[in-house]
Amino acid sequence: MIIPPILAAIGLAALSAIVLALISGFFSAAETGLTAASRARMHQLETQGDAGAKRVNELLDRRERTIGALLLGNNLLNTMAAAITTSLLAAPLGDFGVAVATGVTTLIVLVFAEVLPKTYAIAYPDRTALAVAPAARFFVRVLSPIVIAVQFIVSRTLKMIGVTPRGAPDAYEAEEEIRGAVELHSEEGAVEIDVRDRLRGALDLRALTVADMMIHRKAMKMISVDLPPREIIAQAMASSHTRLPLFEDEQENIIGVLHARDLLRAISEHGRDGVVARDVARAPWFVPETTSAEDQLAEFLRRREHFAIVVDEYGALKGLVTLEDILEEIVGDIKDEHDIAVQGVRPQPDGAVNVDGTVPIRDLNRVMNWSLPDEEAVTIAGLVIHEAQAIPEPGQRFMFHGYRFQVLRRNRNQITALRVERDESAEIAVGT
Image (cartoon, rainbow, N blue to C red; front, side, top):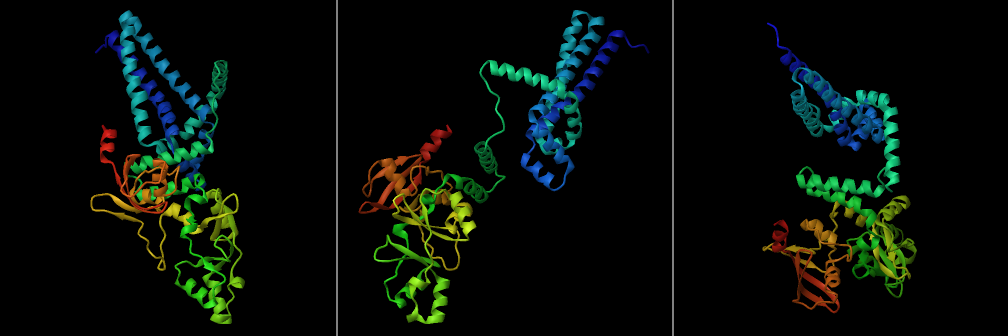
């Protein structure tokens, strides 16, 4: 059976286009896979001795050259497929052959060179990157001279119009990328809420200061050094804390920190009446309230300390901060068998919560999975005062940031209790 020349030309053209499209598909898959591959995963595999991951990281370290070479190979093959198909069909079909060649090439390239390989690479980016890395590295080396020339032309052209190509992302951009990935996977259900909160807490340490997490001076438990030894011992033993500040004359004058272990050792050596608190106390460590939580954590670890007194720029007492306070920003509330549970957040049957005014905004957000802003205030009471621009009276109601607030109690100039609930109507309006 003799195949007519027209059918033979169409078949050869289609076969040539498919073969070139499949080779072009490799470049498309390589470009998508290497672009979407997890740098963190590749780094981890490389540290474990994976040679494929090492090749992937080498390509990603020269991202512009790698992507340039892959795009060059991809476009070269697509153009070649179109040219060969057109030349094969133009002779037997004339001008109509050009139209047929365009349609056939477009369909084949779209399916086999673009959509199919890129869809697979997006679904399995790490697997694709590891598979294509050896061949991709070869093509990058072969095509590097052309890519370098193209990059030179591109960079010169951009500079002529006043655009400077950006380099590697800075630390802030890297942190925001991690934060965005955590939020995305949390919304998709791949990361549980408590895990998300711990990751958020670790990322937020740089933006927080010790003033954001300290125990305010009004809530500090302190002991006067002028009390009789037995009274000092009784107060220390009744406290749920192992470390207590010692003050002399007035609470502003912190002269030391009394540690329960040191106190027990002194009692065993000198008896209850022979304890001299001033001699037993450790020297206080004062830190500025503007110290970042990240720096304070590093100092706690370096000095092997757990307790610091917080002061303002004038040296006035502001509060105290502990290693546990900073760790709780990451892992949530830490309680042991000696902690006294203080119910600062009391959920109500109707979905609202009654909150002590001193409850930190971050703690309420963590407990209720809310998103109240904490840039302008540390506590819930502080947020209401900031937004109201006044000290509200009991019974007053406010609505801001998608939440309703009602002042329940006030003691002098301090809001001591509030009722807070999410404004459902605002959520519906946003959703629509």
